[in-house]
Image (cartoon, rainbow over all chains, first blue to last red; front, side, top):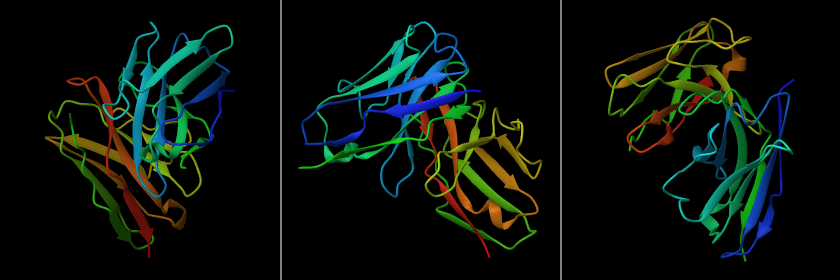
Length: 118
Length: 108
């Protein structure tokens, strides 16, 4: 059974950093692209980042230079390092699997809340 | 990059048909995917690659993609279809995914 479980969220001050992790089970993170998607309170979905099967990373313009996606194949995890956070980054962050780059997301985690506030 | 526009809301009576447009593509050849999201839950894929339907999704959900607009159609609407719906495309010109602005479907 495919499962995605996010962790690492919480409250952080503006300008601070946080590291989110997505634990994957039931499939290999090396044969699927992995994505992070966020949703600000009461707002729509926003794609954040993607790491493909070759380890190449892609980012939304809104987070480029501040967020970094990575994966640990031995632990079957995909992490998202969030730096230089602002209140506009407050959102529920979802991990989602995609069969390949540019393809749909077929499985999602339950989401983890990140709150940026002083 | 693309900016995908959806109407904020669509209201439909039970057993009628709801149509949700997603417009603003730069190219009509892009594959469009559709998600349903209920309050407090993660999104669920209801249509992929323009008109594919994942296992477990009723055939009341269908979609089309022509020109620069894609449309999700929900036939014989049920109360349980009340949710937010989002379209999603991959913008190959910027190597980024883009979500539509989202549409809230209300069953009257």
